[in-house]
Image 1 (cartoon, one colour):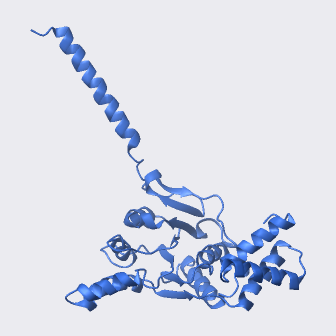
Image 2 (tube, helix red, strand yellow; image 1 turned 30 degrees about the horizontal axis):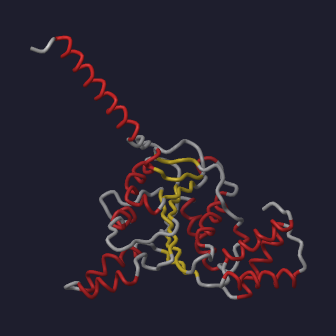
Image 3 (cartoon, one colour; image 1 turned 45 degrees about the vertical axis):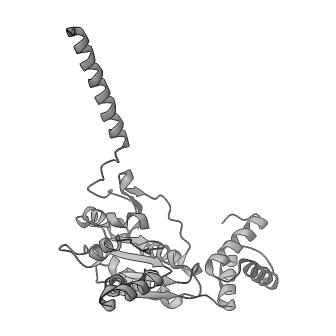
Length: 294
């Protein structure tokens, strides 16, 4: 026969254990996502695992005037973004092409330019969503839908690999679904791939499907959800040097022009190519050498 005190003690022990387990699970569980966006702020990062929209105090952006060699794309994206900020119809945009040619820099610079002179609710809000969080995009849209401000969603380096089905969430969020895209939300993405899918993945679909054209159609149709396709290509030497001159003038880097160009070209040769990113890396190195803060 078991003593009553022993039973009570055993029950208390089990209850304590269950309580500790429950507390541990509560600590491990992600915080609840806020159902409304913050009341103030021009830039956020979408982090559902950490509570939702996290404010960004300072956007890492360069002035729009410093982006050289992308004039046509700059003007098109700027006009599209201004229309959206003014409450007019505008298109989702896919910026695709060569690495380091200023795709993501252009999105951030355009956001800053559009907000110049705007105040309060008229200011456009930039929200970065990471590639890994695309599946949670419908949740984000529900958070933003009821807000009066206008939101520019931005995903850098967007692409999808084999067996990745999260692109379906993006397709539905951009145009499909019962609710569709909220009128106060626009989506911009940058990618090295025009169709956001690796070529071998699309070729494999063609070779193994009963109806090859239909098999590829679902994946290619994702890029069709973007009304604007802006292509970025590798820059020539003149464009590269124009970038260097623009940065040097803007940041007050005093170097004789021929010497500046000679060093910039040597830097590009060492990096294996010319691009906006290579130009900025050279300028950072030169500024450090000259003791200039960028």
